[in-house]
Length: 539
Image (cartoon, rainbow, N blue to C red; front, side, top):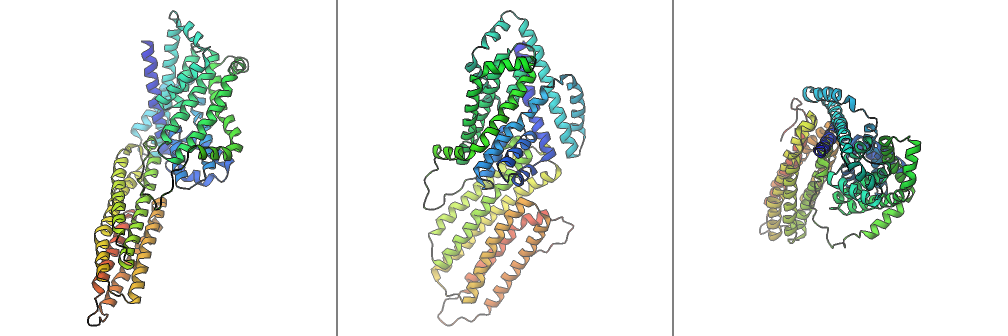
């Protein structure tokens, strides 16, 4: 029965960690990513920024995925992102530091106050604060359960002797706790279990060192598994794992001396010793690694080779990280940035369609078709991913933004349909008839194409900033674009066509109409962002 009590306590810790991540997410939200970008000017600042971010978002997997995203988007070089991850490893241990204060007697008060705020308060900040208190209440309650169950187990015949004997098998304990950390996907839950067992005296002092070391190695393995889908993720996770293995090996060799130090300096306080060892291991390892990050990154680049380059850029299939769903605001930020590849694909499609009509490159049609498939696949994946984000964990603004993203993905798919079906067909017909465009008409049409591609780039900035001023400016530019299209159409309708020459005007009209529709679709996000009470021009 005591084993089931410990298992139930582990479930409570995992549930508490989930509430803690979501509560902190309500308090700090997706702004954490932009804050990290501004703070990481050098390795030292990147390490410090990761430390703070790890304390705010206490999930090593979430931090790793956020680091991989920033690295793959070329926001920061690999050396700084690895420094961020090493700092986050330290920040995540702050939760264990709080657990070591033995505040389990306050669990009922934390559960009552936190539960009331979480369930009955409407303001997102207060609701998030309540969720954090609720989380610590659950974790402290679980710690009390583990301590009571461990004390009862210690009284059972042979159990204390078994744990004492296990204390001599350093490597076995490290491997076991590494596996436990991988299964639980939480270093905090694994260390918290060790704290509870140590608090009751069931886990001997010599076993605490391999317990903490194994937990940290298991966390590094979890990060490697989570980062495996991307090249950057594999390299950064491998570098993190190599550091952990090196530091862990040194700690295991010195385990007897560390245990003796804990018995003396920490006066036999196993709980405080384990928490400080967990923090100190990551802090010393991170500080020692900072000057060696450059050579280590190059080593991992050599070990994990990049795939051979292709003659033409490969189609990009978006990848949505399920791990970041643990932090809803970060997941929403991640989904927002995944809209950028869709706009990039549409911009490429637009350029390819121009080449079909004016450079007679009809083979581009196949490429356009594949790009449209990518846009549709990304939109479907985005909708599924956004559907997994818990609305209850988002504030009102983020909930509305989630709806905007789903609607805008549909508009981008419609944009692709216009390019693939209408604009490309018009370009193919024009290429077949080969009408001679007047220089003025061709120049104006080419200018409109370039402006549309530029506006697709601006749409990515609006997605990133959610800036209302930018949205209003985007709407005005759309109206100016529509006016230019109508003016170009009227001027060229009056153009005289010599007898026997092909008429360029139908092809021009088709292109202008398609460009107007494309600009309407890509401007839909700006219209959704601007409050309805504000007067906006419509075509």
